[in-house]
Image 1 (tube, rainbow, N blue to C red):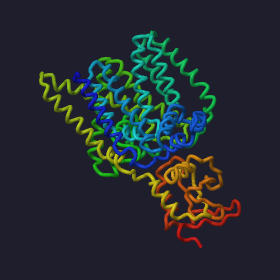
Image 2: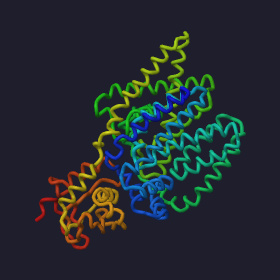
Image 3: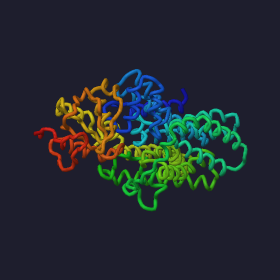
Amino acid sequence: MNRPGLILLLILAAGALLRAAGLGAVDLFGDEYVHIFGALKFRDLLGCLRLAAENPTHLVFDPLQAWLMGLFSDQLWVMRLPAVFWGLFGIAGLWRLGARSGRWTIGAAAAALLTLSPLHIEWSRRVDFYALMCALAVWQADALLRLEKDESVWKPYCAWSVLFLHSHPYAAVMCAVHAAYLGLRGGTRAWRPFLRAWGVAALCYLPWFLYSGHHLTHRQLFDYRWLRHKLPLGAFLLGAPSTLALSTEFFDPAKEGGAAFTWSVAAGCAFLYMSSLASVWRRKGPPVLVLCHLAVPLGLALVVAVDLACRAFFAPRQLILILPFYLLAVAHGASVWLERLGRDGSRAVPAAASAAALAAFAAGALPATIESTWSQRRSMAVWADMSGHLEKSAAPDDVIHFGNSVVASVLLYHHDRAAFRSLTGFRRTPYGMEYETAPGMRVGRRGIRAFIAPGEPGMPRPVKSRLWRVAGEDYDLSLIPPIRDRGRQKPQPPGRRK
């Protein structure tokens, strides 16, 4: 085996270890419920697709993979395996994309950075679409570069676009980035196959859009909190990928210690990115780097714009779409400086500098990587413990009242898989979602003893504190309004029922 192939295998092995170790140890993330529910509830494909139509972003491809895994096992680690595969698939694609710069070492460096990226590791371990979306963006970009040289490649490019569209609407963001790239490059040779590919992809997507697209237009207020906490003022376009490359959405190094070193490494990545941009600007660098430097700022701006217009919320993890392009530009910026160090013909200095830079990135990413890979996230509720608490506290004549269906289903998943599969729906009340059929949780109708009132659906941070305050032994009863429907009495906390 040649040297590049051996290095690629080592990178993939390291990536597999970081993503698969303890895959079932970390508890459920709320958004995983959608996929878990589709995997275990439905044994027919149409039922899975009906569920997918109720979510504006979990479209076809990713619920389908969860459903297929659910046919084999209901274990959490089994259903998370596809995400590991998509993460490794994206790493291999970034290697291939970086090699189009003319040097395979740039692709190797970019793949190594993505392998160590805490954000990519985090979402390569969840029953969710983010690792899949990242991989499809990379392979679609690779097909675009081939399309520019050979018009017959429009079919593979179209295939990647169809898969991307049926996995997430952000495919439209990359379509705009690719169109801007072709416009910047000049010439019209690639426009015809490009438009043909997207025309076919749009026709394939149209039936599904007509079926489920009405969910894409419900608008809520944009959440600017992550900007205030994570990005320095005046460095929005550059700061977002720099900070996200070394942290995760639920782990802030500034609050965990070692912040100075982590942010120093992030600043170094930003410097290398700007070095790459300057080099490409002066020398009219290879097409793949032109595409990267378009994808980072334009992709970031378009993702934010789409969320402002169409989405229910904005989360930093949605920027994983541009992360591989940012890291590829960082790897190229490092190669620019290594070339200067090696002008005297010495190979020892560039090699040592490369090793030191990679070690610094790994050390900067280490706190978030350990937390997201091998530890239970502190900001998430421990659903298994909560399910056990309710099981011990609830009496046969109790009704368990939930703030949203996500919490109810996740808790039931931990307690009784058979009851989880028998779930038929939730009855909406003025105070949340009430689970009607929960024999495994010993639910009755005459009173309420265990009451859960988490925050907004899908918002993890408020969930933990409210869950433990409300379902624990010492919560403030005044926080819970009396339930007046069907003549029920004011809910009583566990252990204090009269």
